[in-house]
Image (cartoon, rainbow, N blue to C red; front, side):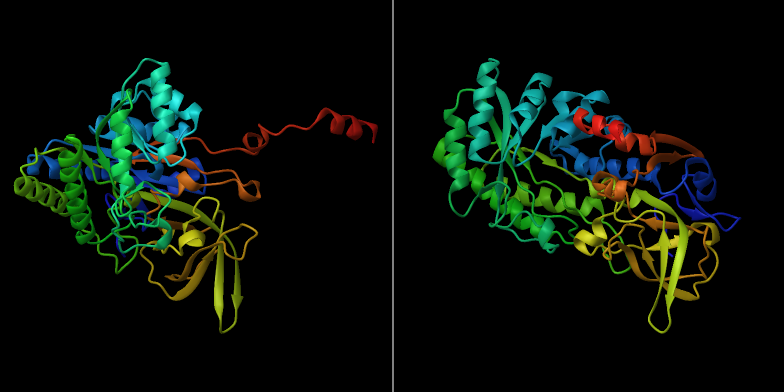
Length: 443
């Protein structure tokens, strides 16, 4: 059994995280429940910052809030000296409501709406990451209306295909994101950005994918971006002060995953940049990265209560829990794999193999196939590990199932940071037209 962060098995045989017994957490907060190991999140953030400090480069580590965006997480990121990467008006609003410094916010997205751009401009965020020519024109026009000049990066696709799932590979040439290097679109974007009077082009951004376990892709991307930067300086006379290499650093979900320490990724990027700068006489830029999953992913655990089960003789035993694809759609989307234990009987040896089903009305609502466990009984607590990234963030109300609560645990204390949705919350935005109300009364 591989336990992350502060997780351990206590003397009661229960899974404990952050000094909190998960059986007690289930009793107090109910299930399904997202549990976040706050100490591990802070440790991961510090590992990235400290790795950069060893390189001697100027840097920003921007937490990619799309992985898990709630106000408490934004406050934690601020406390740990991180910047913040947002990709929507909702994430931006969350950050601002949490009091996150707007000058440390970077705004991504391939289809920022005028309303979202206006919100960001009015908040005076630190930087826009421009994704396409339409946005380039729109941002310049809206900045002009306010008499502002705004910092921006151009997102480029470097043509590097990382070893990852096709749905989360973003650095290859055929991608919905960014300006392509190979076709010359990136150079044209530089020309247009420099011609516009209200855009301050400070650098470029690239992101090659997610859940990456090697450094070669990052080295290749850094080399391509540096070559592009040198070309831009020679052709347009513009020297970039910022190079942003995105995120995508992998974590351990299951046995066989081999993530590298944060410092290994950081050092590979730094070495490539420093080497290229020395060879070309290019001034050392400030280097930005955007870890998301690698900061919060393995710090999250989802706690479920086992309900029914179904045994098909000689084929499979299904065990159903009180959540599923509404709180974790990743297995259905990507075929994502997870490990789990019975939190209330964590010391007992596994003696059967079960498949964990969710409660949604979908055959594809399966959380884990073929999981070794002790004999499972209704009422047992199942803890699924490494659910800190893209679980709460992608949760839905399919089948009108309320979204779970979220707690931060640390030093034996549990703090509720997102309340559990109620059925009334789900219907709170519903409206019945007046004509239908009258029909109902006449009946």
